[in-house]
Image (cartoon, rainbow over all chains, first blue to last red; front, side):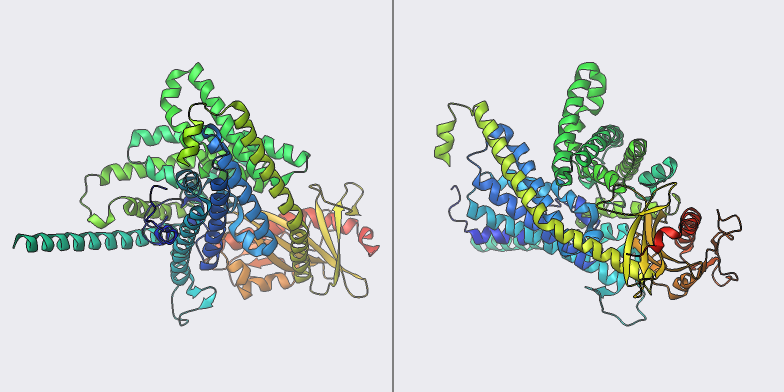
Length: 218
Length: 193
Length: 228
């Protein structure tokens, strides 16, 4: 491997925060924003996506020497679509209400660019173990990000979290947060937060290097 | 089995339940190619075209799958058939009308496996639309997508010259704009009744 | 990995390799999907049947068993055997003494945001709708979805008159929506302030469905008396 120093824990961590698929890479939001109106839906959708991500990473990486380059995209899509179908049926079997809430959006996991992206960019070049860690990291990061979105929308829009009331009755719900536009707004807010953190860190680093160079000059 | 009128299907797909602004489908191309008005219009045309093709495909596949009792193959066959049909059509256009290909061509591969396309196919089968209804649904969805894309591009072209704080540059600004557009589109609610 | 790459580079993968990969993955995927489908299908069917059963008993409070009938025009109704293939279905509810209580009928129509699907119970004795339950709706949370929660609105459907006119082919009085607080007749639906379109939609869906079903049910009453 080209990067022997990088442990598999690093692969896991990077997806969680530094390369968080939603907040940092702004990847794979299309099929998920629509169902992030409550924390529960968002979490379920996030976990379903994470499961598909991990499973397809496992299969793709273990078959990586078996699949010729020319047909790789077609086979990856086939594998991903299979696992999405599996998840679709499993969710139907677990809870019909949840399935109704998520609807056709479960099937749409298949076109989530994040999954094909990880299969192509990572799993096709790495060992099974590392691919699992990568899938877990990205998947958990994705689920976490979705949960953040869903939680904000549910708390502000409905005054509840996981259907437990949080506020006094006098709290006026921000209905707009539950509506589609609220999805855009809360995503924008999270993106702003991450941009701001990034900028602050960049400034700090700048100051640190400046101080360092001054020290060296003395 | 639904008895929705064609007009109500069209209005619903294009305005009330706009694919981009209410279902969040096709966000990637929406954010990616909405910086120039001209590109946005052509992209919209390409999307509408692919939607039409895939809507017809999806209708055929669904009928076939029901006939052979294999509902579990729906997702896989949708993806495979839509992707390959669009590719065939692309080759056909290239041969027949190079001018049209230059206008739409570069976008076709980009949008084939776009969520809006697959979403359209899935929604129309879930709603149980007939053949004509499906085509109208696809036209409506495509028109709605184009409208959202063009509006967005207009806004972004203006904003290019505006001074905004550094933090809001890039994706965050685009998402906020989309949110505002989405609020505007809420005003269309109830039109399809 | 670099080793394998070097070895395969001189000779690009043959057509056979591509076929092998595609067919291999295809077989694997097919097996996986079909086995998951087989395992989950009975559970899913049971869940769906339970959910339907619950809805039927909700809209026909006195029923304890139910039988599914399909409309077989012009011969009336037949008990549904096996799977349904897009036929129009009604669910007859019977009480503990196997006496017919009423019928549950599904209806759909356009709401504010999207299609609203609901099920309502029709009682023979009262010639009225005695309960409704919304099965699917994407109405605006906090406003339009009051059609599912607003007690004053739901009170409309404890007894909503759908008796037939003398010619037995249409309702004596069509179900009409009225402004909140202006309900004077048992066939009027008292609307919700702030959810006008959604509540009007419910009234219209019920009206259209009842105009279609009630005469047909009424004229074929004997078909349901057979009990189980």
